[in-house]
Length: 135
Image (tube, rainbow, N blue to C red; front, side):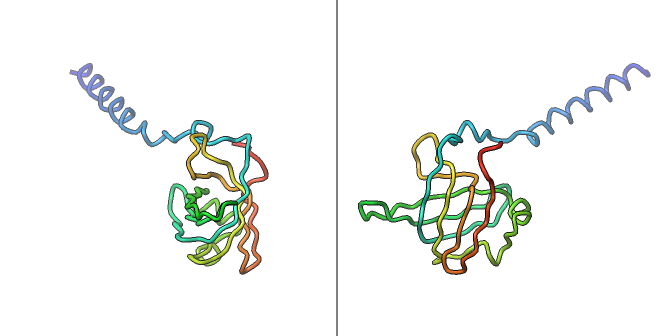
């Protein structure tokens, strides 16, 4: 009878452990983004998402041919942004002009990640989020 309880306990414990594994999963920066290049963009914020696990700026950028391109710019979590001095008030809002330095997507899409710096032209605020690719 004791052996049955031990086996039952072990099976339940292993089952819970297996169910909890996805909690530790996270996508790889290196799989999606090119940490050897940076892009410099200037544009106007169209939407902001102050959310976990990553906050986002959606920015319209006019390219050298005069065509407006929509960029999705992924950043850190709100807690990491707070540590850099940002909050919901100075995170930006639609219509704000910004200058951004960030890492491009490897697949050539208009997605960027882990911003090095962002400057809000209207307020003059600059936030340095990452000196270089260290992750």
